[in-house]
Image (cartoon, rainbow, N blue to C red; front, side, top):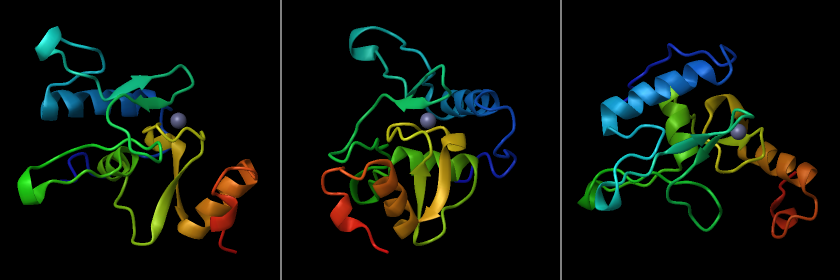
Length: 144
Ligand SMILES: [Zn+2]
């Protein structure tokens, strides 16, 4: 499943290279490109909208926490992983157990691997606290 392997390195050509790889990946795997195609029933929603600041903004399903999820498989094999985790694993490396991804751009819908940093769960909560001390529900969950 690690289709693109580890051939991509974080820090190389910010945005550009990943965007090219993503586009190729999406075209090969799903025939969906980064622009809307077709009309009516045949219209396919693109996965991401690339912003000028380099963020890849998820255009599809989101959950109650404000994260994007990507549906795959059917029946008992149905999975809906978070899109940022899924694409990070596709483009960069498998996420070790107990680790989470922090959006350094503070945009929870972003899927650009260059805007994601591997951190422990407690570090991620501490960062969230620092950024937004008054965030509802966040301050109680901080584990020091
Ligand atoms: Zn971003």
